[in-house]
Image 1 (tube, rainbow, N blue to C red):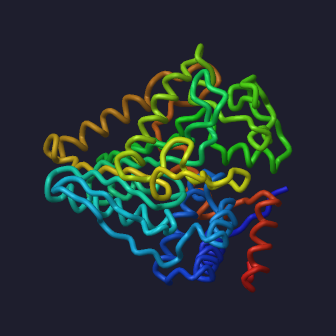
Image 2: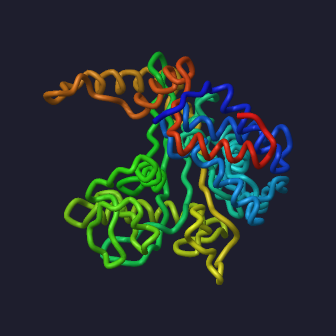
Length: 358
């Protein structure tokens, strides 16, 4: 069963929840907008379905509602930002602005972040650069739920990568993907629907393939992109490791199995190697490589040629990264956002907790 809400209603409700946590009005508005960008773009696993998770972390003292976000180290083109233990939904836009400021001056800017928390969908932050004709890159490490190839231990997060590239007349190229076969949020949605997971998503505690969406709570693990060695899981493992290094080893955040978990069933590591969760952002001026109009013209040509590729039988067309999300946003802004009943019930509990109306 699904219950449909307007975007504006969910945005307002989320903002009021963040205010109730003690966030400033500006931070609450930004956090709500970043969070709801996931629901708009069809990434239901990372939107308001996660709102109660942020509240839980705040109640546990793991999120500071009024963080001191600051640059702690920098060069003309690089910086390290300390997120002050704040909402990643607020820390990430700050860090991307720093990367963009540096890109204006030097052609590119690169920022690694420590002492932060879950930042929503990576694509939202990469797309922040598009408004200034820049190429945006965003990544983050995450809860250690992923077993590297040949491992039974959970060592990495779903560690997403997002890249946004401006075009001219065509919509931008926006790739946003986890380095695992599926993100943990998709397992949570399967649990709420009472459905099984496809083979290749997870393994059990013994390292054997599983279709149980609850298997992570029983010691199982998510699998790297590719699922198993024969299908290229070593490549997904490498990609997830790169995100972990850029996000956490560069900045001084916790990495690998020490990354602080968002999920409630994993404990905090008792021997942290850094501060909080880590992110990494990049901004590159499109005119840093060739004249801007030339760049956009050829991006348009690239997009049009790939979109016109002959589709396989049964498919209407070939998609460009960002097409499904952009189309979902167009529909959901008008028709509203359908939430699963358990997600709506979760929001109802938050409303009761803070004395709000949903």
